[in-house]
Image (cartoon, rainbow, N blue to C red; front, side, top):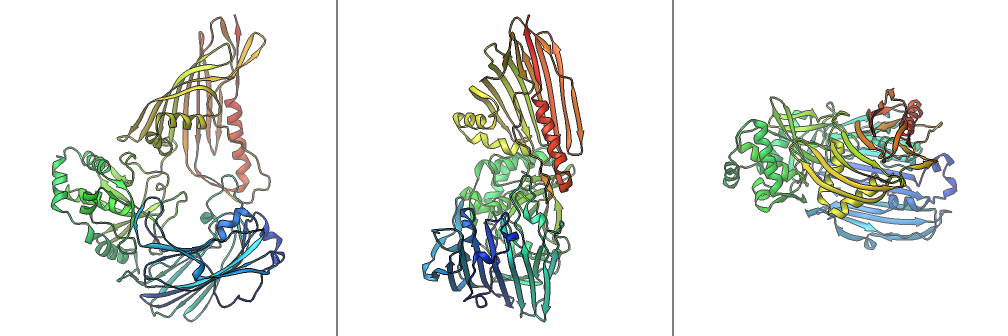
Length: 630
């Protein structure tokens, strides 16, 4: 992941000391659905010149229960060279009485090297506090100075669910003489609003009395619900390199010349690598061969050195060492393509479960990941370079359906990544099942997955046979397996398809009814519990379209006949479609079942309609079939 200068919005240190924060003074509406209540959160940012920015924070957080502990951790991320001062922490009890105070010397100082981080300039200071009772309140303040002025954080009420806000303020004082651009993005759902005031070089933005968002079913990400304010200096500094962001064109040219070009050198070793591959055929065939070659000789390790963690390793260094982060691996892949005479574009993206977009009208530094785009006559080829397992020209759900900053010599072009249709996010399941008189079933299955369902299954290739079987037992827990064995797992990296075969035996599938046996039509189906909500207050989001196609062939036991078969069913809805069909042939019954669900953010008024649609599909999956002795 690309390093970003991310500091949560805290508050001014000097204003609120000598105050107490009794829990009884919190309005009841702010306690609803909340694990923590942000009492006061003020950030003051002072921009003195192009390479001098100072942050002052004071944040007061009341923790209502143990689920809120992690949101009140005293944590200061920083880089080498940052100046940190006036660090203070005070803990209060429920009545607002001070329990204990801490200073900078009480903090631990750690390298910020989580799993996968190999080299990093990142560090953090942290203070561990173990509460003895709930609720309690933590007041935390500090100041930090930095020379990098390209990263000014967005201002939102909060970024996580079950958090409410009494007051949150963002004060930005621009003494640099450089234009500071701001943009307010209102809540599409009127969930909260921000007030703005200005006085010369000072701008102040405030949220008040923002209720918590509960972690409810199918909740859109908070960033899709809440308002935010964005900031960008027209001229900036990044590790001694200065540039401007008056437009995407200007910023892109700076990025290309200062970030990419110095590390995109085609060395003699890289020339030899490409020559040895003897590339032939179409552009797509050449790109695929280079991509799969790159995958075979590299692995992902995060490296956040360089210009603020944004500059890739040299392509030749990645080639020699066999590792790199998203930046280094993407730059290496791009350099291989350069030597092969195939144009490609280094693309900065916001990777994650929420489709965060860059604003075409508001250029600013952003993104947390890098991928590569190769234009061809048949369309764009997209390459995720951090995975040794991912298929050629396949993006995961964390990078599809959003835009990227495509870095070019003459500027940045905003380009959309693919949107996978339901038919592209598909599961196919072919089952042959023998019904046994002891109420068990034995069978075999062929499974295949594409699109986002490929993402979910491709990781099975990294597991041992036992681990794969255990994962499937957990996933397919609607069946009571006596035996389950996955065979012939294939990750088709040419076509982005994951496949495997399954042998199994499951007990207690059917029930006896006198001399007859009753069993359900669909052996493997979702067992989610769908509950209606008459008081839904927010929209709901189906994040991915998908389509599941099942073909199930049942063979009845000897001396039994198929008596009762349900009617064929078709359901059409704005949320998708569902069909279940039956065909009898002698002692066999073929069941075909298909469900298609459409992605989207839907209004709260339609929530129960969607829930009822899914309830119907589950009920029909459970349709009963009767066989009787002859």
